[in-house]
Length: 155
Ligand code: THU
Image (cartoon, rainbow, N blue to C red; front, side, top):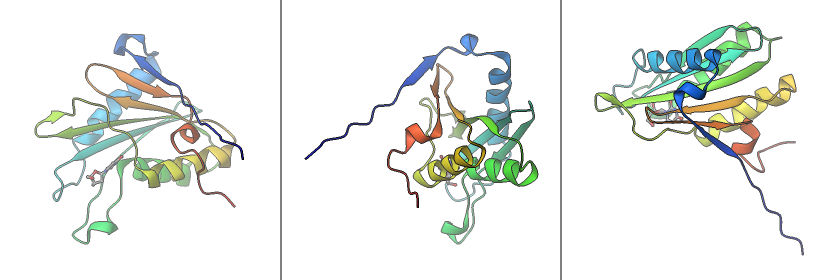
């Protein structure tokens, strides 16, 4: 028998420690929360994608009265980015959430389905995606989406 252990590194940063392009990315993710369509949960999520060529693309959660038909902010942003820029790797994705008239105190982290989709984009472009999780106090940075989903589905 063999036991395997998976470890991930999470970097905790102050806003001032972020490079300018990542500060801009966080700003866009925050702005995107205000454009969310979340009448059922009132939980507004914003995501922002930074492409390798410097382009920024935003997205937000889109809910539906048939609940499972809605879509998370991360996948709205990432699918749009990949669909419109099929040859440009994604460098980073930032996430912010707004609820009860304020940004959430703790950073939120992508759901399992979004993690699987992020990993697909990493594999497709053979390029890691840095994930930035926003809160007012600090930013959590994970070096690649694959770190967030050990033993992800693969064929
Ligand atoms: N949601 C996201 O957009 N991203 C996440 O990472 C987690 C959850 C959305 C789905 C739903 O519209 C609302 O937040 C509440 O779960």
